[in-house]
Image (cartoon, rainbow, N blue to C red):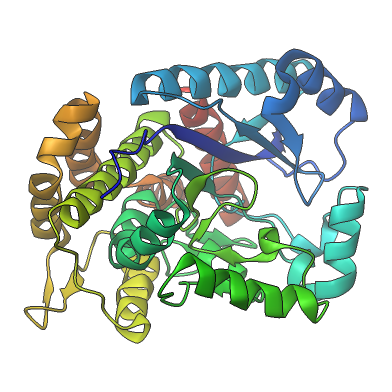
Length: 377
């Protein structure tokens, strides 16, 4: 058995840029905005597929506290620069009332190619997420843990939901972003691979046939990063409140170490069929933390709070090892007060009850998102 991995952590967040007054999505921000961000943040900021989006990424961090500080610095910088242009970033996975067909793609080769290949499926991608990279230098370990961590991905998605609205309507889902993204090819849960070699052989078939250039075009819920020696978790919505996102990132890191400990002790988490895990994925997407997930061993739906308690008990040793017990315990606060999706719906309902029009209520949701995105920085 190899020695313990470093379990370094890096977090990427994608934001939507909105007008500070109207709340509308800014479809064509001035190029000066991105230029200012790049001058200040360098490689830690980048454009996204649509001009109305911007992405930040922390450095390689040794602790969750370091990751939080770096992420807060990046969020604050985007807030300050956008404000000078009459805009604000919102950390939400969909915009409450934007029309996707009014958005413009970023004029860069990668995104131009993406739009050409995927057409309307790509043009609908007015969505944002949070990606968490955990350093695992051994390729075989990365694939082994990818197989096992799939079980817990719906649990993480449920805690992160921030996309209940789409084009001015309440979708009835807590994470409509997942529905939009699932229209893309090569998304969703990855298959189970027996080894890194088997994974590579499958990638080689796709690249050899000219279907993709490289493994960056595998947009799975979790994947071995093509650029870094990490296992990248991609299933979650972006959390509006920074500490919610940090809690989920810490949970993911601790779950991976828990699975590594099992492997060290010649044990492993039971591998369930993708069709079963997909049922929990749908429940997390549809209900968030409200209706529970299936415990496949017990063959019954279990309240999310009970599952969260079990998960926190499983990783208690790992949270202590990483010094992030407080951060993972923050998940209980999310459970108690709800996610961003709950808060957005609450603001919307309160505005309607007070006599606001639908348009006014949706604008109030965006204004709440502006304020909450900046809270705690």
